Image (spheres, rainbow, N blue to C red):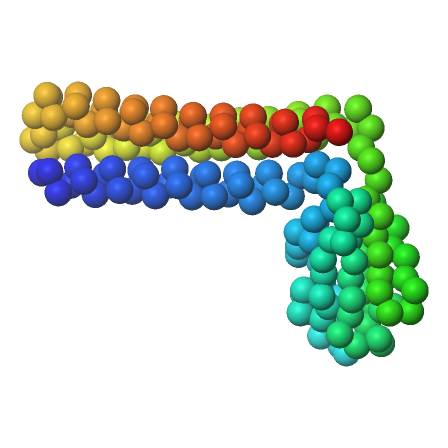
Length: 187
């Protein structure tokens, strides 16, 4: 029976870890006013008729906190990359000098910062719901195990372990949100 409980905890932990990883990805996509190559993550370019990720056709870096520099490996790719950036509707205005495309990241307004904080909190709330769902699924499984012969004491102990796990992950989510909020509000 202990093996089953261990497996139950492992499944709950895995679901909660996946939730944290997903939240980190979502929070990284909320731009905080600083230039970051990940802002172009998921952007695809028409590379001689095939759809290709921008990171596979150009070198992308940030020479300063307000600029993203995109240096295509082939000069012929400047126009398709510019077109892809404009079509992606990211709110960026690419500027090229014939060799490098530069994107200047505008300073965020206070209103925009507050909206980004709301968006981050919304993502955090979704993550908390997901963690609580994992807890509920584990507790439901414990109730089934109790019907199949698990002692009441073991069930109560396991429920408190699952609750402790849930509290730990909710705390991790709060920590991630606090850090992101500080990042967004920092001028």
